[in-house]
View 1 (cartoon, rainbow, N blue to C red):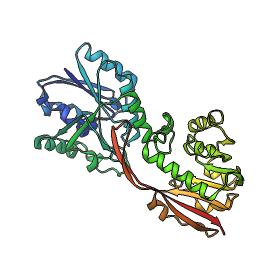
View 2 (tube, rainbow, N blue to C red; view 1 turned 90 degrees about the vertical axis):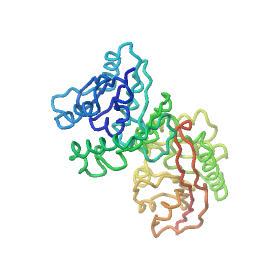
View 3 (cartoon, one colour; view 1 turned 90 degrees about the horizontal axis):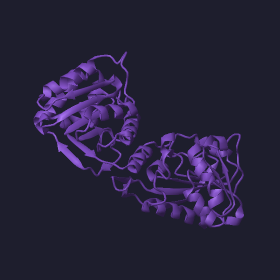
View 4 (cartoon, rainbow, N blue to C red; view 1 turned 120 degrees about the horizontal axis):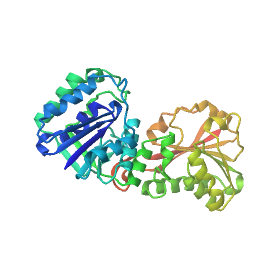
Amino acid sequence: MIDVVAVLRPEDVVVDFLSVLDPARGREVHLLVADRGAYLKLPVDVPLAGRLAPLADLLAGSSDGAKPFSPGTAADAIALETGDVEATVWTHNPADRRERRGRWGLELADLVRRAPVLHAVGDAHWFQWITDIDERLSPSLIESKLDFVNTHGTALLGLDEQDDDALLTSRVHSVERFFGSTPDERARLYAVMGGRGEHAATVSDPWEFATSPYEVDRLDAVLDWVRSHLDPAAGRVIEVGACEGALTRRLLAEGYSVDATEPNPAFLERLRALTVTAPGNLRVHPHSYEDLTTTRRLTGSAYLLIELLYYAQDLALLDRFPTDRLFVAMEPVKLAAQSWPSGWSVEEQVELAAPRFEPVVSGRAYLRKRGSRGVLLRRR
């Protein structure tokens, strides 16, 4: 049996996979360090100090001149070096908040042949994880881990906390946790950590609006709230940042005429499909929040900014929306921190969804959904 630890950087092996390196497991270990272009074979009888020494050398050395592994060449090397021997590949979590490691874990796992793949939880503290293997390190292993990072990772210890390579307390684990995944789970884990960026659109419905009880209840509550104030015959509704159209579908089914906007190209394409699959009067636009306040203004009876204002948008631009009503929804803490322009008054606040814990990605993890509160703004 061979354990193959395939990671981006030398310290990753020690920080997340020291339990796999433990000679007490009685297994041959292969180390693939992508950034250094290194593939190392550690026989069963090599003690821990001997297994850590080449990693220290790699960390101390420069990557100049190295030919890094891509996920494809890494998968080829693993297949070649393990041959017909049964092996397990250990690598990064697709939901690791350090984007390069997350992408590596996603792409490598999709390319590995024959061998099962296990992911370290790594730096993914937004979730609580349902893991398959939890290894509580012995005092001697913890001592070895801390000695390695203190001796060979001094430069990384001093990095700013925003640096993906910084050695932080939360990244140097005393319990190493691992899980397997299906291709769909990997893709969704990677997408859900993509946030507002392009990676979120790599799968359909990354935030599970169609299947999450919390999201379904929240969207239904938004529809009820809009319906209580706005007659479908009153004019077009402008939905800003409509994503794939989870709320759009509900509005169309209630008879609203909708201008739905979405700047993300992949989400926009899925949103446009609603013009065929969903009945109703729908126009789709590739406009951002900023576009709608400058050169791409759309006239409507109301603007809907639902779970949108989390990205430091300039609220002064709200004055430029050609409407007298704004429906805004956000998590309550964030909403309370907003300072609305003087040209708008708060007509109503309403609770749309209470906070709750909920499983995500087929139950692989769970997290707290933070609740949603709506505020109806009227132009003075």
